[in-house]
Picture 1 (cartoon, rainbow, N blue to C red):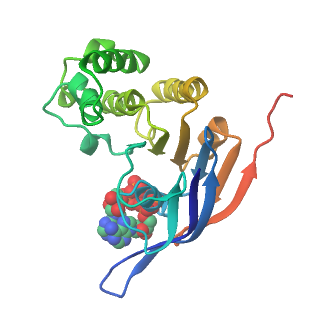
Picture 2 (spheres, protein in one colour):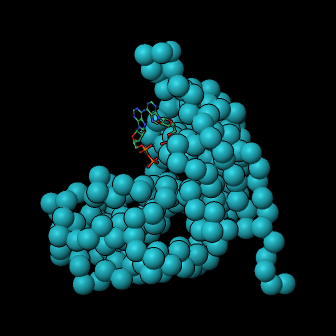
Length: 226
Ligand code: ADP
Ligand code: ADP
């Protein structure tokens, strides 16, 4: 349902252009949790920005349910590593989670219910009326995740979402992500530099090496128990 076909992204530079992603092709089935693992600088963020419609591809295409992606699709939610830039620091946590739901035209009663349950899921029920600037980095990232969960996207795109939270919170959030996917059938595209994390979350892992990024191999991880 999500198909990346021979994608290339070249950034304009003074020396004539820098190709961050080249010849990138893969597809993700509905309900799949697909992880891409690769080192810093391999072009993972560039790839996700193009798939999310936040940036244009230089060549190739991204299609979702048969439609070419150009501009951010309403069916997607994106969680970036950089939570500090993604939340509005001066409005409450609850409002941050609610705003995308207002844009989607969801009723006030349902918005309130979704905001409360998403914040509960990430362990922030008590922080609803706080402002993001009053929270720790890990808590802010949990708000960003709650916002994505409450939106109930068809595709959840995550760029190293747990890289800056402490180990215990990270383990909890990984399990939360697995549970949400199980319960809702949300398709997840998850990018990380951490091989252990990629294998824990998924049994289909794509490996990218270095810029210009392309998939070297897609590994089917055998399940440990029959
Ligand atoms: P990551 O943490 O994924 O490695 P980076 O630190 O490489 O991310 O990049 C952070 C932001 O800066 C991104 O929005 C990226 O597009 C932008 N960026 C990275 N490298 C450059 C560059 N050489 N010129 C301009 N923008 C860049
Ligand atoms: P990753 O997320 O895997 O760390 P990025 O996609 O952030 O990789 O960056 C891949 C390469 O593209 C890096 O060399 C980075 O410096 C370069 N890059 C990223 N954004 C820009 C930009 N806006 N302009 C020029 N180069 C960029």
